[in-house]
Each structure stands twice: as C-alpha cells, then as structure tokens.
Amino acid sequence: MINFSTMSISQPANERELLLRAQSLAGFSLGELAGHANKIIPNNLNRSKGWIGKLIEMYLGASAGNKPEPDFTAIGVELKTIPIDNYGRPLQTTFVCVAQLTGNSGITWEASYVRYKLTRVLWIPVEGQREIPLSQRRIGNPILWSPDATELLQLKSDWEELMDLIVLGKVTSITASYGEVLQLRPKAANNLAVTTAIDDLGKIINTIPLGFYLKKTFTSKLLSSNFFI
DNA sequence: GTGTGATCATCG
DNA sequence: CGATGATCACAC
Image (cartoon, rainbow, N blue to C red; front, side, top):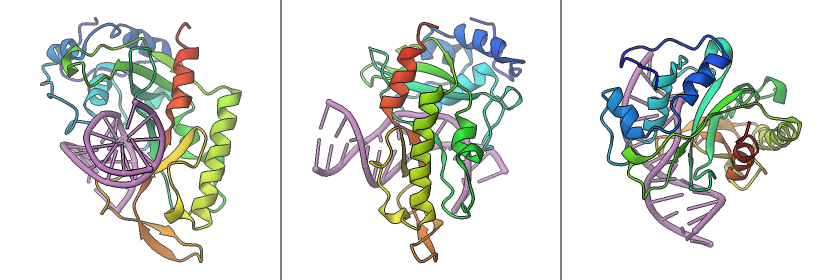
C-alpha cells in the first residue's frame, strides 16, 4: 500500500496514476484502510451510508467535493464504489446524479449530466454483504470504464424516455420500473423533501426530488466483462 | 433545498 | 428475497 498520510493527498495527474493508486488498494480491508488513515469504523452503514465512498475518495485524492462534477475533475474521471457479493455481482443500484425536473426544454442526451457523469468511471468494487463486518470487507480490483456503443445506446434511450416523462409533466406517475438500465427513484433526505416540477398542464408543482440510478443488471455486466482487462 | 457519498428496509 | 421507495450524513 502506498504510504499515504492522513492529511491531504494529491490528485492523480493522469488516468494511469489514478489506476495504479486504485490497484494498490485492492486486497486491503476497510479496517486496514481506516486504521491507516486514523478513521473510526462505524459498526454498520445505517447512519454512515457514504462512508466507504468517502474513505476511498480520500485515498485516491478525489477533488470535486459536492460540486456536480466528476470526482477527478482535471482528468475527467468519476469515482464509484460499488458493493458486490461473493460472485462479484452488485448488491445495490448505483446513484448517478439528481434529475432536473424543470427547465428541460431542448436538453439533449449529449448535453445531459447522466452522459457527463458516465463518460469515464473508475469502479471500485467492495465486498458488501451485511454478514461481513465492515472492517473485514475487502477492496477489489478497480475497473476504468467508458460505456461501449451498446451501453451508450441503452443509456440514451432510457434517458430520453425518462426525460420525456419529466418534460411532459408526468413526474408524479414515474416509478422505478421505467427504464431498462437507468431508472428514476427518490433522492432525498426523506419523503417530506420537496422540489419543483411541472404537471401535465405546464404548471409548477411540488414533488419529491428524483435521482438517476443504474440498475444492477447494467453494472453487473460491465463489472464482469471488464474484470480481466 | 441541492448536491455529494450512497445503503436501508419494507413489501409484494 | 429482490426491487422500489425511503432514508442517513454532511457541506454549503
């Protein structure tokens, strides 16, 4: 493992450096990483849902903070930790970004945040079974990924279908079952959270904020088909 | 509230 | 038992 201090870690200068850094973490447990960084390990993730992501971000020198940009802004790479089972299959869907529910006239897939976020992603698989104590869960081999032509088409058509629902004022009838590989689900502090959207008459309404998520079938394929690269 | 990091937990 | 809907923490 690279001898990181617990303080600030420089951003990787390029993809190769980032990948090497990520590869150096593979095989270590969360307990080892947390201990090395003098971080306290929570008993579970119930009240620390983003904890693993933040820990890995720190080790890799991610920089975007809570700005709507790729984590490694300078080199245009987004970081995603993804919980996996014994067979390397995802245990959860993957959050991509929040969905703008107003002001979408004229927006195209090419100019969308979903496209922007998913152009280049560094996936870090992490053992995610709840039976494994957090400190014993191990980091897997990273995968530097860009969507291939097929994946791009799947994402684009789902995005267009979902955006049509938003633009046409059908927001309140959206469920997570729309979309083959991409879905819209609540993304909020709780179900009292509110944002603005438009109804089918074009009037402003209040509704729960939604986010785009990648379904497990999609991430499962990309993880398995890129594993041996 | 919005956006980051996500996973929890209930229900069919 | 998995997917959908709900939720947690934090920065600003």
